[in-house]
Length: 196
Image (cartoon, rainbow, N blue to C red; front, side, top):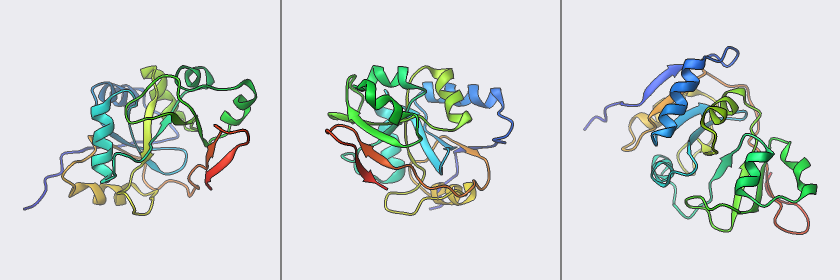
């Protein structure tokens, strides 16, 4: 049986951010929807980090087991402080575009004792977070175990036959080649790289 495509696709220009698209994206996220968006590395899946149903949908879209940790985009250190315990000397680390694992302060769905947070270097993502006022759960827009992509067309092909699909794809075409962020554990005495 042919799977019908029901995810909405909007072409966007990362050089000229459209306020209406940012508002629409924020509204969908508030309503528990899952969005594919360009990030400062590759395309990612984002949703309300406080919404268990939306996070569960991300895992279903990716065919990923629920036990695996999932990171969070935050706007700034002030927002980070609401959700994780940060020592004063650790603040300088957060300014880089890496993911940092810290002890959790405010419980979020599917998070245990620690939370991976990242301040993205993406005007689009930061604009969406500002419009919402809360963090976004985030992970790469690929099926679990498959390679990452910077090409929106590949993502559309990947998800169009899936039983569970993203609700919206923000299509910025082919993104510049960039490495995924490092994951660094700051819960111990010394920083420890978990993913290069």
